[in-house]
Every structure is written in structure tokens, then in C-alpha cells.
Length: 364
Ligand code: GDP
Image 1 (cartoon, rainbow, N blue to C red):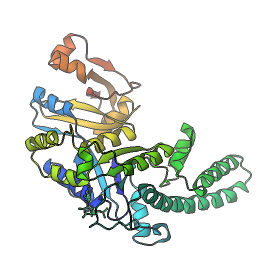
Image 2 (cartoon, rainbow, N blue to C red; image 1 turned 30 degrees about the vertical axis):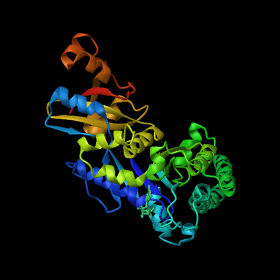
Image 3 (tube, helix red, strand yellow; image 1 turned 90 degrees about the vertical axis):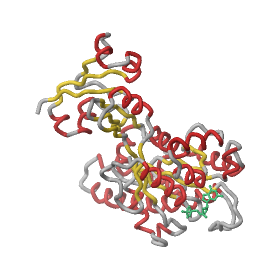
Image 4 (cartoon, rainbow, N blue to C red; image 1 turned 180 degrees about the horizontal axis):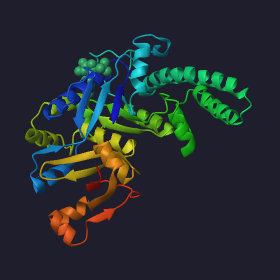
């Protein structure tokens, strides 16, 4: 899963991104820890992994991870090539979802590019740049489809009408994700690689004080109203506090959070929300060598889930031996779960569930 962090200058993107890279550096032993300076990798928090690690005492435990890309440089006029312009937009094309950081804190020492705090206006500025870029793209599509239509093939007429409806939405200044699409249309939209069709999570960046008092200031209310209109989610964070949390040892972290009256860090909430936003779940593998979590999309069948581990597993798939995480914990050991008949043998059509502890059987 790849998430792109966007937002106007001075809203707290780098602060949040620093927190992410620090948190990522903490849990080292990823073969791919440093890729590019603007990419940070963090573990998806999953307490089931800790419990399985206690049960199996494996040589290593490997969480599944999320990549965050810091996409700086978006300013008014980016779609026309201002700022980092096109480079910025191409980075957005490569992510699965967008985390849009919106400034909801006041601080006289930190200038706002437009002179005052205004979440709705800020969002509009960014969204419009993305809308403009999508308009360019869809108009090119429409031109191409018109030419194809001359061949007389009826399917191009339907395509053209669909693209026209997308153009209409964009011309109204609305993102494509606000359209009510059928599953089939949604699949067609994904082929267009539009920027405004990607799911968005708005991160309301509030001050330290506001976070402690529940994070409900008038800026956040303004942001929530706007997000609701397009069906997007809002989460409240304080980037500054996240940066502090990321520097703490795991044991200190819990104390610090409880002092603030919080149960988990904003970063953990952000990761969990993104998982939900993208319809992702994790299945688990456990043995004496490794306990590990694997990310799949909801609805993935067993062979494709096996393919996440290795393509040979998918090709030679025979069956999956599965026990639900909660059943395994209740029994206390795999052998006990098996005795109780809770280890199921599932075939090719089985749809994987979140928390399935899985052993794949396959031919090589
Ligand atoms: P970017 O341009 O969006 O990457 O913004 P930065 O992360 O560089 O933040 C701009 C300024 O705002 C820096 O001086 C940060 O210390 C400050 N800042 C960021 N987040 C917060 C926050 O949650 N509270 C306060 N008070 N200041 C913040």
C-alpha cells in the first residue's frame, strides 16, 4: 500500500513525514528501508503479531508495511506547470490513496500561503489543481474515442458518454470520487489513472492544545462539512506531537500517550484508517521461523493470497489450512485447535478473512 501525503506549503506535511520516517527507522530489519528520500516505510500495527510471536517464539517477526510518499510542491497553478507541477502530479498517479494534510492550527509565526487559516479554501485550491489535471487527461481521451467512433463500433459511443459524464463532473469542480459509480464503471475509471478518483483521507492538523481537548475546533468543523459532501473521511492529528512520539522508546510511548489521554498514536490511527479506506485486510502466517502478516484486498481468494508470498504458491495451489486467529488464541496452540476441528481445509474458491492464520499446501 502506497499513500501520498499532499497539502499546501506550511501545513505540517514534512513534520508528519519526519514522524513517519523516524517511526520506520525504529523497527529496522526491512530489506527495503531506505529507498528514496521522500519515501518512508512503517509497519502496520497489529497486536495479533505480538501474540503469535509469544506463541511461536519465531526467529523473526515481520509486520506488513505501508509506504508513505511525501509529495511536496503543490501550489496554486501546479496543473499548469508551476511549482514542481508535472513532477508532483506524476507522483500522485503512483499512489493508492491520498492523505491530504490540512492546516487547522493557528500560529502567528508560521505564515500561511494565503494569509489566513481556511481549511475549505485550502482543500479547494489543491483539489482544483487535481481536477484541472484530470480535465486535461479526460479531454484527450474524449478526442481519441471520437476518432475510434468513426469505425462504427457501438461500444465507443458508450465509452464516449461515460467520459463526457466524467468531464461534466470535473467541469463542476468536483472530484471523480464524488460520482456515484457502479462497480463496472469504477473498474473503467481505474483504467484512466485519474488523480481525483483516488480515495482521500483528510488529516486535520491541529495544535497540541486542541488535540488534548478532543481536537474539535471550528477549522476542523469546516473541514468535516466539506469532506462529508464528497464522502471522504477526516482524522484529527497533531503533526508536532507525532514527531515527539516517534522519537520515544516503545515503553515511553505508552506513558506519553496516556499522559495526553490518548490510546494510540495518530500515526497508528492514520495507518489503520488508510487500511480501511482501501478495503485491505491482513492474513497471518506463523511457524518457528517466522511470524508474519500479509496485506490483501477484501474478497481475495486463497490462491491469490498465496501468490503474495510467492508466485509458485499460487500456481501450484492445492489447499489452505486455516484457523481463525481468535480460535487459535482460545485454544492456546495449533495442535489444540486442530483437535477441536477448528483448523479448516479450504480450496480455490475460499475467500480469505482478516486474521486467518494460514498454511498453504502447494505442488512445486
Ligand atoms: P510543510 O510545508 O507542509 O511540509 O510544513 P512543515 O511540516 O514544514 O510545517 C511548517 C511549520 O509548521 C513548521 O514550523 C512546523 O513546526 C509547524 N507545525 C507543523 N505541524 C504543527 C502542529 O501540529 N502544531 C504547530 N503549532 N505547529 C506545527
